[in-house]
Length: 84
Image (cartoon, rainbow, N blue to C red):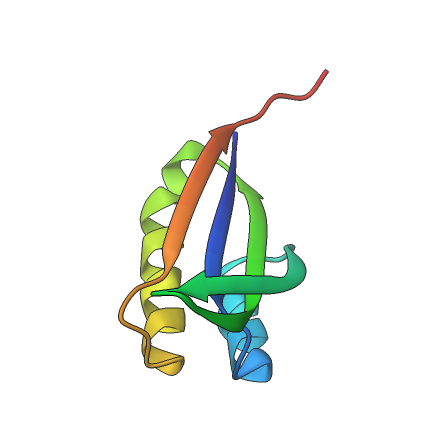
């Protein structure tokens, strides 16, 4: 299992939630302030716990979010997780 985090600008939130919901049943959103090229912006961090084989779906979903927000890029990070 992995934790995937997608970092994007906090615009079009309703559309982003719909995109994520089409791919995954559960997720968490965090609000923050991000900086891109020295300029601050409202940021949205999407966190999803998923199986290793979901990585292609995460990438496709991130591409949809990048498109709907008309961004140059979005950041996707992943971290190994385990249940104890």
